[in-house]
Image (cartoon, rainbow, N blue to C red):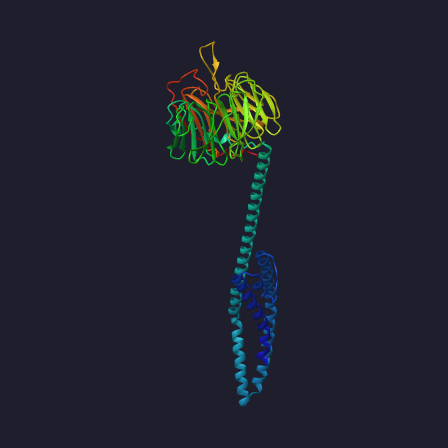
Length: 534
């Protein structure tokens, strides 16, 4: 009976300690809230491992506190029981003279043994201390796991915020692009390429007059005064196909141009290629195979400009006959003709909207044609013949003239937003200087990067200021000859220049040291670190 009184005191503590250990081990093995619930015989439903870990830590801390409070009480009860046994053992020893006395002595000796074992209680305490050390380790690991979960949640929140910022930025760009006002800042990242990095493709016998790049940037079409069209591979620089010159009056021969090719355009899906020449003809080709499909006639003079409306097979053409015509290439049909210019039109461009822009040559105007309304907007700013034009986005464009000026335009203002005079400098004897003619312009779509060409032995890259109200020179790229055509790749990774010994529209000068060639100019970008405080 005496020995049985001491067992209940140890039994509950042992049960609580074993339960805590089993709960922690089950939680660590299963990693679930139900395993953690075994700690106190309860069940819980939480939404995350972090909450389960938090509840487990709190429950284990409470269990440790209960055990610490239970130690002094257990020790006092044990001491009181031992005192009772000692007193009974002494009285039994005075009366013990028989076998029962011997038995009592045995009982006393057993009690004495328990007394002798009592001072060695620190071994049990050491075990309890070891158990507490393990408990604390488990608590520490649980807290560490909880901290890791918290860090993971913070990282996920940061990633979500970053993704939302990116999505918001893309949506903003889409809205600006639809409104025709998108201006990405890429010009300041462009590094001037070394001369050795420029690839020169030679195959034409006479001056290059125009060129286009396929939408996937894999091939280049170039045309020249030798009446040929060559398809080049951008990667290898090799000729993929040559459309030869057609002989006049030759029937049954492969179709082609019999006079200078002045302009080309390719549809935004890369299916159709259109080319126009001095013989008033527009030829339609299948871009992949270079097979001739249709011939459009109707212009009364040289065809000087071609452009497909993006996303469609609607083709715009202009001519020295001062008209603008609309064609449907997919249906091989003519649509309508628009008039307005007072002199030969030199160039044309178009984007997604049902409108196009033209450079009016000697009439000194830039015009925006609204096709459905059959109306036009007229812009003035250059003092010479406007020979080249290209849209930057739906609302802004860049043009060049033979007075040496480059102009930036907005469709809402009749005067240039920015005008750079003598953009390529002056030539001639002192006192008789004349500006270098601007023979070609190009713009990287929806950005602030513009390129201009002349016969000043270089191509110049420019940065458009905020709102296209300023034009700042970035760098010069050395190229000898007339830069008759310039095109940026869709990705903006390279610029292609069509170089000739003569101007594309005439033979006013001849630069003998120039090479009639297609030049691929790589554009390397170096990210600019953000300004301090931005």
